[in-house]
Length: 151
Image (cartoon, rainbow, N blue to C red):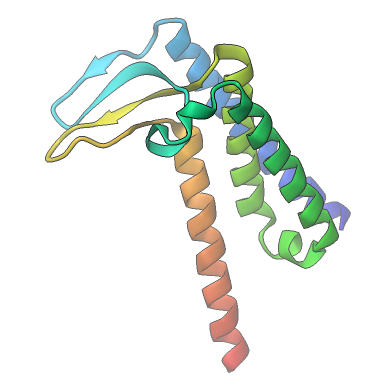
């Protein structure tokens, strides 16, 4: 279990530090870009995906922090899930924790990638991408494990 926790912690730390470093650069004014397909702009998302639940205001950060702590406690209890998906879960938790930290420091999540070619998409950040990749990785690993178990 120590090795699994070490993999989880390392992944968590790497994702968290990279995300916070990128956000720091944007808050300092670096990285502005206006292109044909996407722009790099600085925004503060007061809600969650697509600004949903912004009406919760300051309470949202405490709700999200509670959810992260509850989910982590559950994963410690259900060790098999953490053992099977340590990297993906580390990515998700590192990214989620970074976004929650933004709420405490900046009053909202620091977002900066705005896709606007063919359609306008929500502004997002590195942490959002890591969460998506982590979820896809868990789905792929689960699908693969079921496929292997059949043979």
